[in-house]
Image 1 (cartoon, chains in turn green, yellow):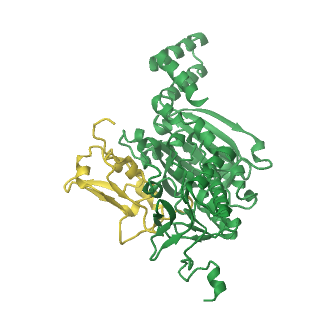
Image 2: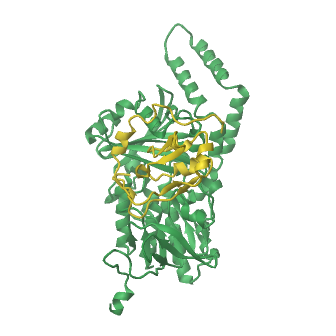
Image 3: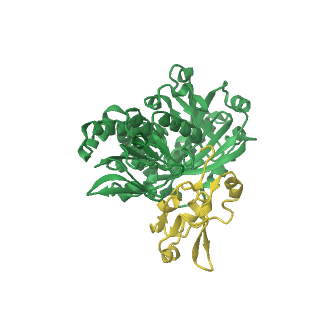
Length: 448
Length: 106
């Protein structure tokens, strides 16, 4: 091999890099890892992204809605060419009882103008697009390779050990974008493993349906999309949400439930998904749609309170592994991308300084506070999960609200005043006045 | 958590097979990425939430043998079993690189 060949990062026939030292190692080719890898490579850093799946995206699951502006901070104008499903112009919130629904929603053409607000996506397609961008920027992506261990020397992270023979890879900076199961981060002692009260099990089905039928059923023009989030009986009143999103020629239908509550009942995630598919408000929307794929994933719900130390000597943690998810607003990939980008910028700085200490990489957290809404938003909702666990927001109130609607919309021999009194009596029967007052006060304190 | 046993409803997961049929796997025939650390703890465990909360019915309790059967080849790699186990009794890792679930859409 000539000297020039050695200097370049090449790969052997098996795809294993022949140079095992890099400027930056990124673990995981999801939105966080691919954003980090793209930004590092663009700055000229010798960057490797290690992915355990056969291709980027094949292990990844989300609802999923991808927000354009945060994504465009890494891949400008990606929406003009990326494999996106539909531009979301209508977002709905449904409050469900077993057989009824209160519908709210907002539809606006502004969501599609200029820089569109968000798109529905399928992760296997979009992650592969992001991976192509990372490679075009110069990053090396090695698939089918699991990182078994983060290598340390004297308390400093110096590389990773992969499952390949002679699979140790070294770099002064390792960016962990390992996803919701934080095996490597835990092994480093940077956080504790997930607990049932901060993890939601989520199942989803992709249901194939003709675009024309989707557009007709959801009142959409070509390329336009709608989302529906469902609360209440859709998760049997347990803390969680169900969702139905329109893709180009399929629907994504799924639900997630906090494990601590779900563990109390004998039903399976599959059962709840079946129940959802048969709900009278959901069934007509998915009728005739052919199941194309079933999937499951955990969503980290710990938020601000469970956020690990985001950095150490030679290491930064991004995306789901760092609990950077705002469940209430179904935001995750945007925070993943921004955290990956910010970690990358910190790595670039560290390389310029030639220093990789926790103090230098600590700028990652500082930057994330200052330049992205990520940490500020998580801090705002830090009490949200606990509030939802301690108040019957998703059990008592949806049924009560439905009762009120049904009573007021039914014309019979009762006067409207009588109906109002009956609603008030029913409300007090289902929830004591001090309970309601406590729900309202604590709700105010937890969310405002 | 209350102490009543909650395992799984008899008719639960009806139709799950059809659903799993849509999933593509590259099965690692050589080794399971999932195992139980202490089989005695499973016997003491009343609810066995790993069984009902697994989205892919990987776990089954063999009453005669008093052992948890693990169909790891069905695993969707979500991590629910590990997180929901009241005894922290899973040796849980992702399958070897390139193996396990391979989503087509995600």
